[in-house]
Image (cartoon, rainbow, N blue to C red; front, side):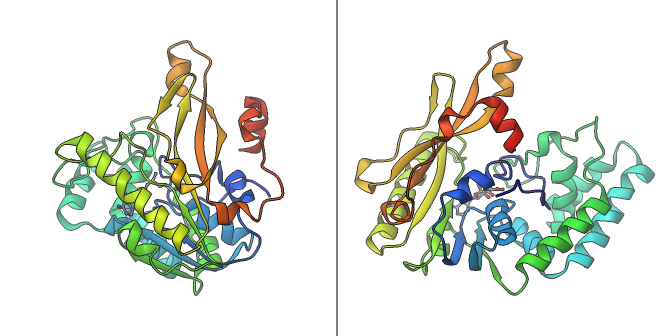
Length: 302
Ligand SMILES: C[S@@+](CC[C@H](N)C(=O)[O-])C[C@H]1O[C@@H](n2cnc3c(N)ncnc32)[C@H](O)[C@@H]1O
């Protein structure tokens, strides 16, 4: 499988670079692929590019992101025109443009403005405060994804997914509730430690417990799942492993060099954990050893 070129939403944490390896673990003929923590929906887009499933259910809990994905899939012309005019606005208004768009977005939650903010903000990393307002700052060194590139990508994604994908705003458990044994649920939840909430630790534990109970329910219903969850950089592990009771196979995927470690003068790679449920692993004749790939192999592949 070839690397994924299409990326309509330049989302930090996107699985675009890892999509070929993750999708290599997928069962051969998937009826519906569920992606309940969709973000930019990189895995659904990759799977559709390679015809890996008949239908797609793309879900996320963030309403404006879901509206944006819906526009890209169903109305690529409209969203491309909006993005172009927002993008051009920065050359007319100048340095204050990003902040005025951010204020406007926090008032009216227009998904086209969200796209512009994601494309223009630092590291394409969305950040919100407790009130749900977008707080990330502008990246002063770049002007953001070119409108022509976005337009071509949005049309390509629309051709792949229009009529095949249902895009829903829902909690992950509700999104996966109708999945059946011939489907596959791929999950990429926020890492443990990045969950927000008044008491962060409590919220983290609660989310993890909910996730584990949803996965146990998928097992009971014989629905195959694959889950990306935490990992390690050098010797530092992030988050606790999932319980053995889920009976899932654990692999590490080489996810590239850690930029933070490189800045600190250490040559460390990040390995992401991936869990394959017993019913999904049944389809695999052998387990790939992604952990042992060299950084060079990773760079060539990504
Ligand atoms: C790590 S990102 C997924 C990135 C995605 N794999 C991609 O390639 O862009 C996690 C996503 O889960 C969403 N999310 C967080 N909590 C959720 C929940 N309880 N139910 C559904 N989605 C949730 C966030 O809005 C975010 O877009």
